Length: 160
Image 1 (cartoon, one colour):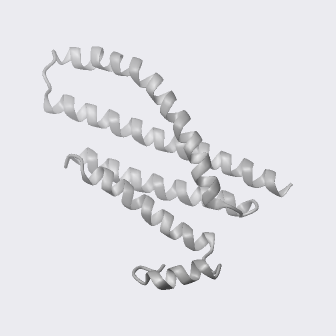
Image 2 (cartoon, rainbow, N blue to C red):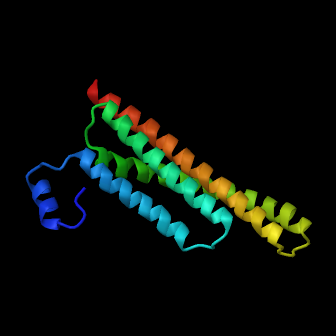
Image 3 (cartoon, rainbow, N blue to C red):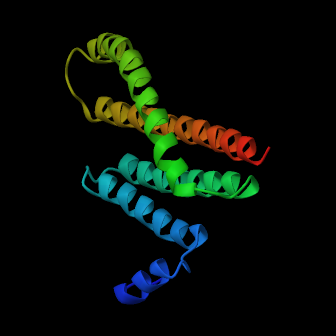
């Protein structure tokens, strides 16, 4: 990876010496920094730290898996496929999450928070953070599993 010499990076790109494999390193670095930036700006609880570790771990695993799925197929157009497929999968997952989150949020607020008599205790906040961590990690896993499946279908179909 080139860290500072933009002219060298531009030269490699212009002369078609910059491969998808090299580009993937930058993509992975950017993805990891994005996850850290999101969690680094939230609370300093232990649950947030666990969520950060899970988020980075899932991002590394998922990104590597989609790149490998593409490479095991025809190995073409990784970034074009990534942005197109992740847009549609992300949008569909967002809509699904909103449709599920509204009734689940209402049930959660009624059952959990009502049982705490509407007093936000440290235990209630910890439970809330834990549930959020589990749900967000689950959504990330679903997103990457769907993306991996899509990459396998697209990469195989193009070679036939």
